[in-house]
Image (cartoon, rainbow over all chains, first blue to last red; front, side, top):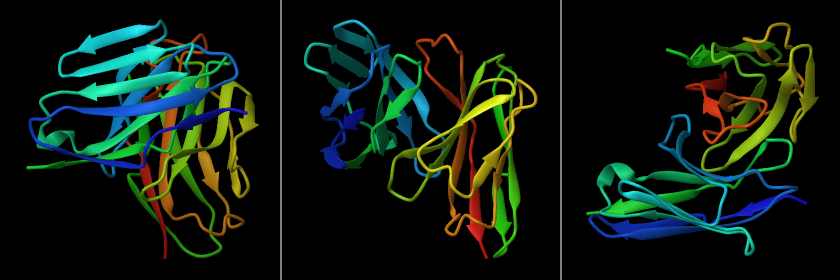
Length: 109
Length: 114
C-alpha cells in the first residue's frame, strides 16, 4: 500500500531551528513534496525533491533519501508566521500525490 | 495570471439539499482533484479527473458527484446522501506529466450544514 507518516504536532521557539520528518511508501516514485498550510487556507508549495540530497531555499531546506524512504523539512530562524501545518506528499507513478496527515507546528515566543 | 478559482468561499446547506461547488482553472492542466479536509486532519481525496470526460472515485466518493465536460472546469456536487458534509473543500490541478510544483490549489470552499 501507499503511506506517508509524519508527526502530528511539534513545538519550537522563535529564532530556533526545527526539523519535521516524513517517511513514505508509494507505488513508484516521482518526487517528494512539502506544502505549508495556514489554518483555514489552501496549501502552498514549499519544496520538491526527486534526487537524494539537500535542497536549500532561504530559511527552508528539504532533504531526501530514496533508499530509506525518508525526507525532512528544516526550518531555520523560526518566525511566528511559520506557525502552520506542514504537509508531506509523495508523488506516485501516476503523478498523483499521496498525502500525509500534516504536522502542526507551534512557534512559541 | 493563471490559477484556480473556487466559489463560493462559504456555503451553507440545509438538510436534504444538494449543493454544487465550482472549480475553474486557466493553467491548461489536464488533471484536477477534489479534496475534503476536516478540522485538524489531512487531505482526503473525493474524486479526480486526468482528462476531459473521464473521472475516477477517490477514497471518500460516497455522497458526492462530479463532471468534467471542459478542461477548465471540475464542479463538485455534494448530494443529500452525504450525511456529514460540513468540511473545507479544496480543488487542485496538475500537469498530467507532473511537474516539480506538484499541485496548484484553489482557495477552498467552507461548507456548513444548517
